[in-house]
Length: 262
Image (cartoon, rainbow, N blue to C red; front, side, top):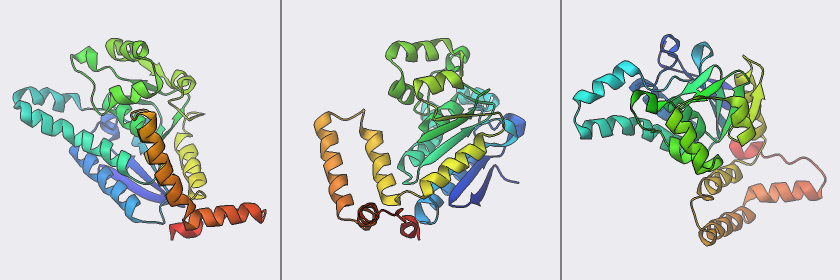
């Protein structure tokens, strides 16, 4: 069995980090497999959403400490190239037109937490945690952690999370808005797959446009975001998805957007 397991559940592509002996620590093989899975989702109109999870009841432990130890012997440029392997995965999640959902059991630590926060939605078992404890081993965050934390937490809280490196309960993250759904232990994947199926009933082009708009909303000035919104709305108003949605509303029936995924 490989480092990445994939399966289709309805219209949802389920991608599993399959390294439970190392609590699903990140690896080059996982990066390659996940990027391939995201490319598959982007190219296959039958796939409406992607769910990421970890085998053996743990989402991801982040970087393998033994691998990180070897980085000291590398040149600076070699270390940059190695870190960019992770960053290419984060960009692939961002650029995938399908919604990507993290399903967290156990924990998400270090770059594993960055990976989860990079996703468009997060489902977590209520006994799970995140930990961005880079500072405790003399490191600084990567994988977009500082950016993602700053999307939902003020600077002082971001500093506390990153400077102390304490575990964060998912219940606290849920209260802060960084986790969409809490489940009983062992049920995060089921809930994430169900959420993916709900997304499968939505218009795919509209979802892709919404994903892009949500990504730029905090980074852009209002005028630039308004310009992006007007272009997206003008495109949507002239499209087949809007025609179906508006006609269904006027005809008092449920819209059928599934034909746009064929």
